[in-house]
Image 1 (cartoon, rainbow, N blue to C red):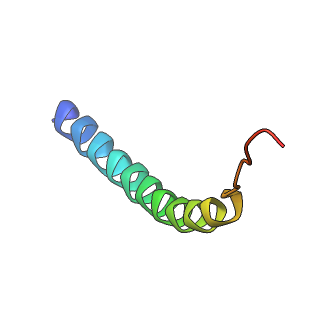
Image 2: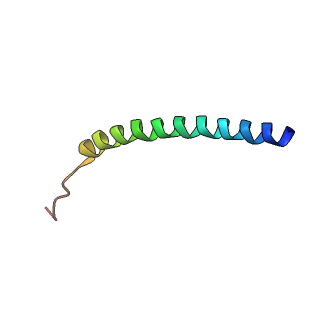
Length: 47
């Protein structure tokens, strides 16, 4: 009985971490797209 509760607690905690990480990845994905547009630079030749 104790092991079932432990497994359930780990599953719930892991699910919360996964959803938080997924929203962070989605937010960061939007930020990196805008940052990549800003970071595009043309490097000229010699002169």
